[in-house]
Length: 130
Image (cartoon, rainbow, N blue to C red; front, side, top):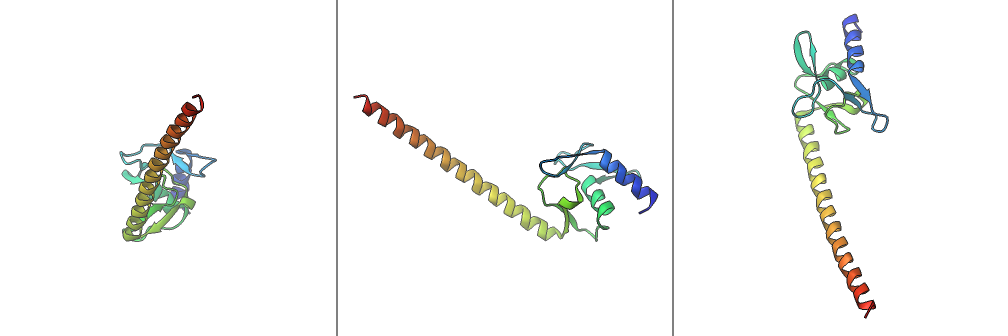
């Protein structure tokens, strides 16, 4: 590791906070509208998670995507990052969106069941006092 890379690594660590629960290294510097951390390197603005991956793991090949396994866009923990193709990243994102929709549908069903249960309990209590 060059002296320049070592300084950049220290800068990344200084600009992040380790979350003891999730083990994410949460970027505390500038984040864009989508929540991705950004850092200036040699007068160029780069994504912090991509810089972290290159410093800690390997250089990024071509136009590969650095995927957040933790789903936290501001995370720069190299253990939470994985180099994937654009296609692999899109498939995983679609699966995640689909899974979230299923969870929301189940939550709605549970809320509806809770309302019906409350109605039944209220009816039972009303008929017991007669």
